[in-house]
Image 1 (cartoon, rainbow, N blue to C red):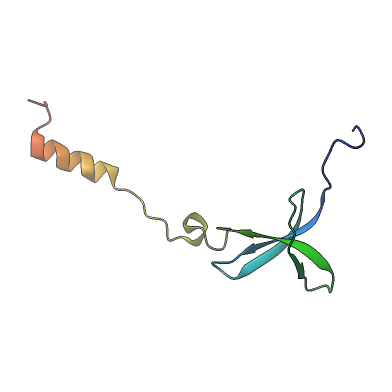
Image 2: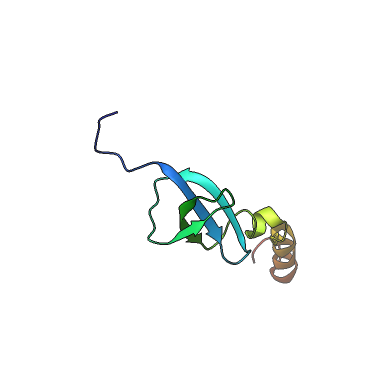
Length: 83
């Protein structure tokens, strides 16, 4: 890799404010705000809208659309041949 062209890759805390959940990982994201982590060190913190803790797909609260039922209802209402 060429020197001086890549951003710093360092530990960063991502915090999901909606679910009150935070996790430490490595990233190139920057932030002016910091947080003291469980290990006693201070890391930059980035607030996120959703994470695996609050996203409906991961929590199992996602709604599945009943497209087959909608098609059948349309065909009953307007007929299969479209006439």
